[in-house]
Figure 1 (cartoon, rainbow, N blue to C red):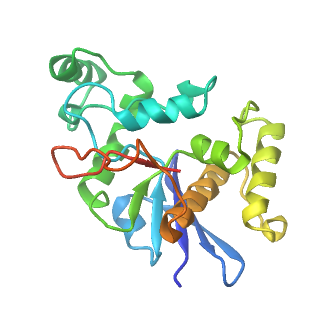
Figure 2 (figure 1 turned 120 degrees about the horizontal axis):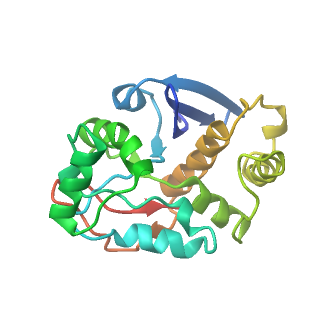
Figure 3 (figure 1 turned 90 degrees about the vertical axis):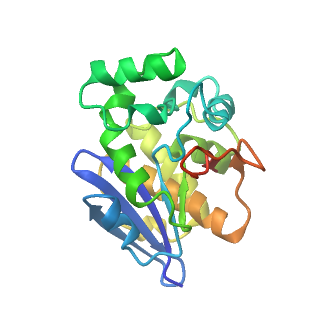
Length: 220
């Protein structure tokens, strides 16, 4: 099999963790954009980015994901409405969001809007691609909400130990510093579960589909 790809955003684009279970290997990939993501020969791909954008109001997937990790639900950014795609400034994005939904949008969401747009244009309709959220994945892997912050040494160590339950050979892998690579591995875990049919899909079946035909779900 070609393996499972978990992808997390980083300052230079995306970092990919390509997990080959048979060879017991993780290949770390620096990916510039969505085209490079879908060009990776992976059996399944999990991306930590909103896929499937509402016309108005919040997504049920985000509400369910936040509920899964209380009291750390704020880690799940609300997906923007589709109308904000193409907005150049934060002010313009807020105006479009207000018109469409009666709500503004967070600055954090605006900062990832180019990535949301790129994935929506290129990757969202690839049948191998699913939306994931690393903190929700870690909660499922641990069977509890993780209260340690992922950017702390203790938080990184806890998350790598949990991933070691899936990849017993992970202690032999050189995991890059920072939290992005660890999150990419969590994305790969949920992607593997999705591929073998053991993952949850928030908010559950049948999940909503947006106006462009993209599923509004988070795979856990």
